[in-house]
Image (cartoon, rainbow, N blue to C red; front, side, top):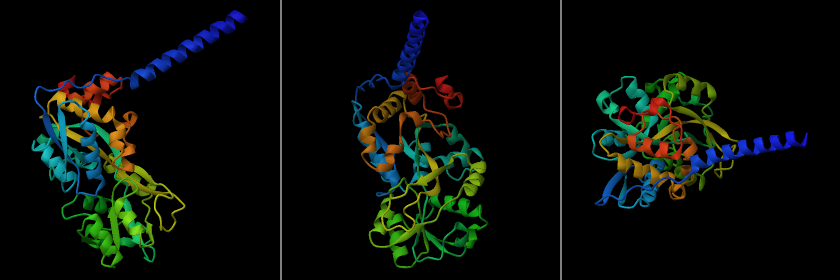
Length: 344
């Protein structure tokens, strides 16, 4: 009997050691990138200064300073559409792009990138980001998405992909694009317009706490309009890059109903590059962030949603071969659909 117990103990301990070893492999340090013969400088596209996309471009550049011989500069751009175009045109090495851009391009929409350009774009990692904040003042009669017909909506600049978000979401509740007024303003300007009664709704994106909402909460009481599961289900059927999100209770002051979570939606935010960027540079970019996450996380609370274990979640396009090299060295299982032809 004692022998049986001892054997069982040894077997359990061995199984535990194997499991621990496998876990350790996934978290093991991987080789640092080789220092290039001459310093390499790259640009990382974010968004307008003050927007979440800009913060995480800054965080990425900050982490990349850890890679010997590499220097990265965050580029203040108009946002994810411009980033996609600059990368596709080989005018910028890296940038953040909304997953919806790739969903729509695969469906034949060439308004952002062409089919040929899409075939040359590659992913590095993903960040669940862009929780939608649909904001009204506390005295507003608007309580549901269905109440927004005929209203003045702001929060995005002219030509921003954000207006596609608005039309897609409101379309699920029967409000056509011509049934509300777009007021193209950036986040801070839109919040000021809301305070002055010049717009009815500010529609913002970004992991909470959203700086513009914090700014509003300093002087005005407000509420957030939820985006319920029924809307999410309709969106997901059209574009799988949509995800459910929650704005946690207590994250904002001066908010009506702030003692409860607010259900909303978000897009997968894709760290993107192209086949024009060499494998060593992409490996360095992934290594720098994943091996120095504290640097990346330090720029914004929402940056902490990036983790190694979720870095491939919601990935809408294949990985770059340099990123494949990093994840394989790390012991991460990569779905076959994410392996590009050049890494097979």
